[in-house]
Length: 293
Image (tube, rainbow, N blue to C red; front, side, top):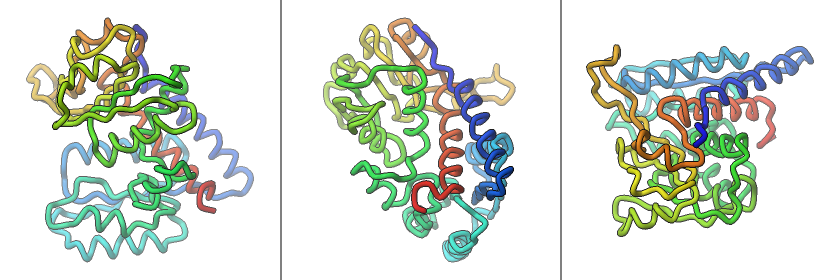
């Protein structure tokens, strides 16, 4: 069993990005600029955004954080999105999800200029991804692809089972794994809460991607010997022994599943660091106008 170290891989990629940004600036080019909108004080969102700001510093980017209280009107938030769309200094920006219930997340996502949509959530980027055109790829799936690539994991002709059908992880990951590319060329099965014979299907997976948001859902009897397991889950489970009062727990029951795997990602330190790293790569592409000119 080999542990896939997302933290070390992400640090290596950020160093590569920082070196490229240094060269761009030294050659008289523009420093990439990422902006982030944060609404309210959700603990998870606060952590993610703080980590994104730190990652920008590590990569040599300019970053701007725009905060609103959770009683901000949809109209005011959309006005800020429009302002960022028109700000020529901002190369890419994100609106941290989830948003308060009175704001339509879909309306906000669609309001973002797809050329600045470094989260890869806009319907134009999602559509281009589905037919294999250049686009900003959703950060978590992109991070998992990079882990498969950097660890040289064979994917062609393999059976990939994706647990979860979210627009942010499950669906784009399934699309990427079936495309004519490396990593890719898999036969893909997508499972979800209504899937029958779930355990039996999981046991046929050469590559199992767990993205259901249910802690410890995947147990040893669901994984075949030698499988590659990527765990997307990051649920805060109360744990009085931890200083924070909770423990980040994946969708995979790591201790019992790991011995059966050829490769597995831990939680934390697996897929999570790669998500932010992928956002940095998308921002670099946006700064270079590498996809949409």
